Image 1: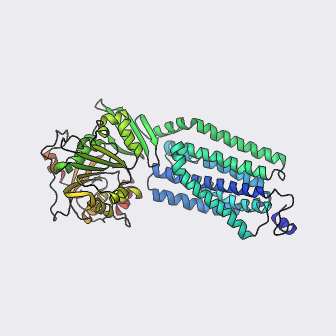
Image 2: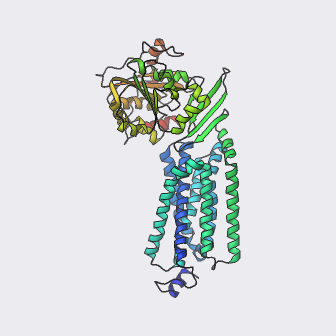
Image 3: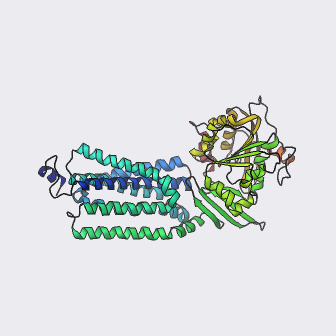
Amino acid sequence: MSTTTLERATPATGPVPGAPSRGARFLLLLAVFVCAACGLVYELALTALGSYLIGNSVLQTSVVISVMVFAMGIGSVAAKPLQRRAVGAFALVEVLLALVGGLSVLLLYVSFAWLRIYMPTMVVVSFAVGLLIGAEIPLLMTLLQRIRRQEAGSAVADMFAFDYVGALVGGLGFPLLLLPAFGQLKGALVVGAVNAVAGVVVVLWIFRRETRRFVRIALLTAMAAVLAVLGTVYALADDIEVTARQQLYRDPIIHAETTPYQDIVVTQSTAFTGEPDTRLFLNGDLQFSSVDEYRYHEALVHPALAGKHSSVLVLGGGDALAVREVLRYDDVDKVTLVDLDPAMTRLARTFGPLRELNDHALLDPRVTVVNADAFNWLRDATGRYDAVLIDFPDPDTAALAKLYSVEFYHLLGRVLNPGSRVVVQGGSPFFAPKSYWSIAATVGKAGYTTTEYQVDVPSFGNWGYILAVRGDGGTAPPLRLAGDAPPLRFLDRAVLEAATVFPVDRRPQDVRASTLMDPAVLEYTRHEWQNY
């Protein structure tokens, strides 16, 4: 019976003859709630995976949302001819959505790891998911009208109320429940299974008297097949993830985990020196190699500790390798390490290869670990420090770019003692000169005087730092070592003297300072590193 026929045969305030009871209306709206939550989780899973694998979270989010919304419009139009068979059509749409959405993360990860194709696959998967989500709306409206006659405005209000609340639950459940409990791959599979059951069983139960037996059997069989596929993939998910992840790294992986903040991978192999080469990767980007990390960390830490260093603040550097260097000074009384990800600092404290490399630094009673966003932590910080080491990853996302902004360095001034020395890792002056000099310009614009220097770290290539003091009358801080500096493997006075000399083609450039409203360093970083 069509909707038009129902309208003619039924009073505006009464139930449709032969239709399900009024109680079924709430059950159907509950299905709307669950399906909306599942749909938003698919969207969030796609954007989060893109941020982990590719970076550039703003672009990933924009592409996923715009493609999905566009596809939803097409799906809504495409579903119009299906309204006459709304029960079977809706159940079939949910079966397909559960399959595509549940496998979406796996498809993208496998495509990225083995085929080295991501963006085209993401567009196709986003379009398919959006198309099926869009088809839900007209079909659900038809089903609601078949349960109980309502004015169109009232029916739309009820449906979208449950839809939006479901989206809220899905949006909060993804980072707070699904990611910590299941991870991205398994989380999408679990959501797909819930989607299939809610979309098929509930609707077929409500309309069981109106649906032919063979249609019910066919749809339930299709649902069972999808659940079997999702369940099989779930059982194999760990092996699939390990195999796919290994395709992305040259050396054997000895630890891997995905946290709400990042993807952490540790590899280990026998280096050309015959010593074990332990490497840490965050979201696919190399953070250090144990063969030469001492070069990087000596250059980062010891020039900043050439002045007073009783109290030291380390921002970033959750691997605790910078903290290790700080603790080599006997007169250091207090070290505060602020790192966003508790999984990273836990790994530095408990994971054997990393713990040995940082010399058990986080077990030292002088060290306090704070897991917080450094920007927000600085807004409420009350302590004062003699030296600050800033060891964040390169600013290739919006979240990291704010940690390289004028506003961030202004906040930093609140925790500095008079004469405190600050050092910032600034990326590569060779591979990304605009990014490097933009960071230097940003520190200067925030009221610091700076000394720029660079060293060679074989794993990274040429790498640069900015040494700064706040409001020192325009006098650049001298690049030197403390009189009580411990014996170093790489750094000495001659190396530091040479470190301030930049070749002609890598000297200061005409670049913009970076602010929260104009994250210039993000633009420079993305452009300069895209071919490496």
